[in-house]
Amino acid sequence: MKKNLIIIIGSLEVGGAEKHVATIYPKLVSLGWSIKVVTLTNKGPLAPILEKAGISVSPSLSIQQHEKFQKLPRLLGRMLRMFWCIKTLVSLFKKSNNTIIHFFLPEAYVLGMFSAKLANFKGPTIMSRRSMRDYQIRRPILAWCEKLLRNSTSFVTGNSQAVIHQLEEEHILKEKLKLIYNGINLEPYRVAVNRSEIRKILNIQDEALVLIMVCNLIPYKGHSDLLKALSIVKNKLPIGWHLLCVGRDNGIGESLKQEAKVLNIGEQVVWLGSRFDVANLQSASDIGILCSHEEGFSNAVLEGMAAGLPMVVTDVGGNKEAVLDEENGYVVQAKDPQGLAEAILKLAVDPAKAKQFGQNGQSRVKAFFSLDACVDAYIQLYESCQ
Image (tube, rainbow, N blue to C red; front, side, top):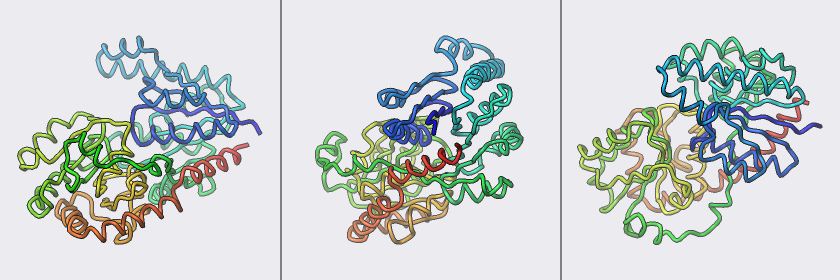
């Protein structure tokens, strides 16, 4: 069996899909796969992880081209960038007919499949959808293009039963659909961490209650809901509590900081930006939270479980497939600060229950969402393409 694979993705910035790629594919290289990653924009900070594993990472645009297109009027710059990406991909696909092409995320899929058709590519193609289809409302042209192209692929993967169900509703043939849950590397969570030292660096006392939410600062992630929820119970939480917000600022950071101040919790919220020591931060925390309005299947939830955190998540996407309500956390309705506040308070005032939920979560993530299980699922998928 030929083990040649090309991954097409927007970039390798720090995000859920990008971290997934950077985690999974070094494992496949160690199993004899030859892998090339092509980004539609810049490489991004996760590229060195792949390159260290022997994976070639190539942007469709050079830095100079990217800067040149950014200086143009927005629509013209975007059109020229898309044209250049397609030109690059067509050239690549013409040389790659014995290769499996795997597209991550809608834009990469649409541009990639269009390029494959122009190149008359005859090899297997795979589309991975990693979120619910809410993006189709915001980007109707992209959704229309996806609808035209998606049945041309060999397989379509989803990372939760919720995503798979939506793909079925879109009339994708069942034999093309594959469920592949995210898998995380559990090794960082097996290493004992010095909670006191980490908290000292953050200027947080050892006995303080620490909540953590790991996701980029994007409106649909629900940070504003969380701030409102904490303002409701701020006087009922243990004195000295803190919230750690970990993630890249996608443009709403200042407004969130201002909202926290208005709600009189600005001193309790620590904005940490994008970090590579998430496992340590989670291991130094007490409760994990993800209150997004839409989700496919969150690595951050699995990472929180691996760290032994009881989780509070919203009932969107695959969240409740990872967090079982009242077993390893609480599942609440999205956009409901009151419900979110009540769930947080239940864990905050009952350390014994929080500890048991955390232990249950660790057992669950080891049993169902390990990196090895995820890698095995991808290998089975790729072997079925041969």
